[in-house]
Length: 156
Image (tube, rainbow, N blue to C red):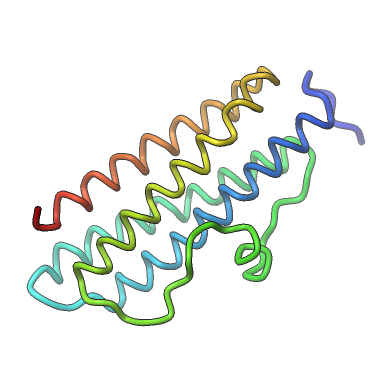
C-alpha cells in the first residue's frame, strides 16, 4: 500500500537515506560503547563501566526509534553489520584501548552522530517532516550532552 502522509516519495526516500546513516552511526556507537563497557579497566572502572552502560542502553532504544521512523516513511531499515559498516561514519573498534582513549573515541563517536543528524535537517525541514525533526533534535541533544560528559572526564 502506498504511503500518503503529505511528504513526496522522493523526499521520504532522501530522509530515509539520511536516517539510515544515522541508524548505522548509532548502532556502531552502541557496539563500541558496549565493547568498552565490557573491557574498561583502571582507576575509573566503576564510573566508566556504569556510564558506558547507561549510554549503550539509551542507544539500544534509540536505534529502534530511528529504524521505526524509516519504516513509517515507507522504506526498509538497514539491519545487518555489512549494511551498517557501509553506511557508518564511525570506525569499528578492533582493539582494547586504555580508558582515556576509550573516552576520546566515544567523544568522537557522539559528535559524529550529532553531525550525521544535523546533515539531514535541511531535507527534513523542506519536507515539513516534523516527526523526523523532533527525533533528530532529541538525538542531537542526547549525543551533545554525552560528548560533554565524556570530555569532562579527560584531563585538560
